[in-house]
Image 1 (cartoon, rainbow, N blue to C red):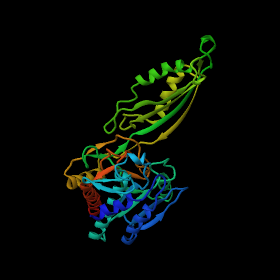
Image 2: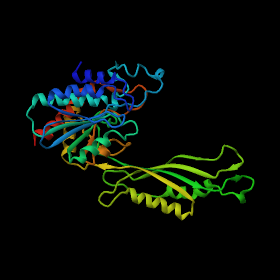
Image 3: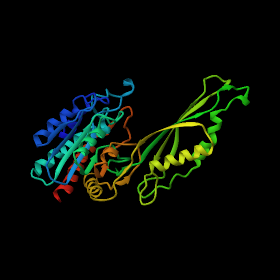
Length: 381
């Protein structure tokens, strides 16, 4: 059993249901301190985080990730107990195997190998680890980044160990994520008996033309890195449950996954908000609208993208493509103090599912990818 596989199994055996850490971070710290890392434990609210750094000079390459995992779901639907890591048919099964404890193990052993071979390397290595990524994400990476920014600390490069691979490990790097803009829209009407339509104002009927306009709107055409912005309704609720009562209001939850503005193409948070309000106002609706925003980020082709792409090709024999698809990640927070942020990790086919797993044969090349990236960025400096 390789050191990376052994460490992954140790991490996976810990029940770190978000936002619990269950000792995962202390296990990682116990491996990093002997290498000369300065450890800062940064607990906010009920969330454990730590920031570790080895070295005082630039460039600074930081590995980022999370120890928390999503709930297991029905235990009787798992082939093997989710917190008893099991190897079966060359697959390692456990909750968090793909998202993202295997990456955490590979971070640590890659750093151990690199430091053993290059104890006096140039630049610095860092880790930013949270236990609040799978939950509400308010006391984790975002708080650590705020604290680091307040004291003027910035990263040169950051690799987030999210499971980005699609069909084979190594085929996809995430070099950005779309923005997320959610709205809670309440359209008001007049409730009343359905048999007296002249005495009511049906808010569902009133909002229907506006919905049609929003569905048919081309918000933008995308750009070099991002697909076109999409708008979707996720929930719509109105009515008392009775068949003879017109509702007094209807609540609609919707979301933009938007292409951020780049070289004159794409959208911005403010632009999307203005356009939505213009549609609603055009139809003279009586409404309330609350917004929730998660920022996008993008890392154009450059030192980090080139270095990890070359490392992936060496380790896996695969040429990766760049992608900005998928949901949000903590990369959106880290981008505030780091110009070059990418995400790379195992296959994402089983994340958040029953019987989550990774291929055992893919684990050592993952460690090698991270180690080779360290070599390409720090030894060349």
